[in-house]
Image 1 (tube, rainbow, N blue to C red):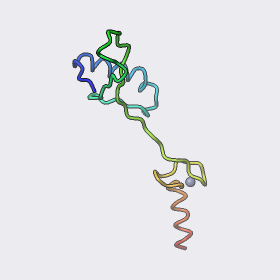
Image 2 (cartoon, helix red, strand yellow):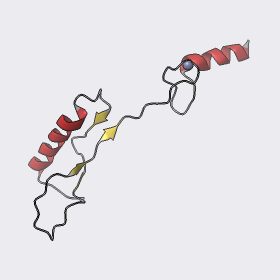
Image 3 (cartoon, rainbow, N blue to C red):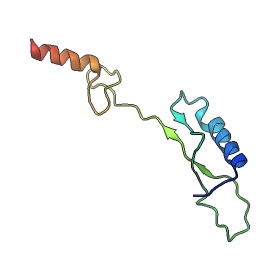
Image 4 (cartoon, rainbow, N blue to C red):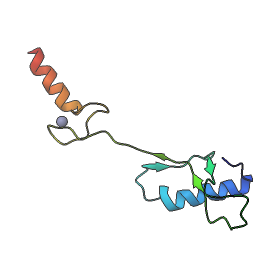
Length: 92
Ligand SMILES: [Zn+2]
């Protein structure tokens, strides 16, 4: 973990958003206070730094419903509609 000058940090966040978040259907988000890692960079070597890691959020959607193919509830194999359908049949 590196502490970067604020101007550079802001530039990197902006670049990360341009390179990844934009056009991602909001499935990739980068916080204003993202974390940075230059794990590949060895300060002992005088090689130029070509980039760095910027922390990001990625949206992970739930599975598809095994019955109708709609998006299931997180952690479930069925969607709300199919769950309700099963429940109403069971309660009948
Ligand atoms: Zn369903």
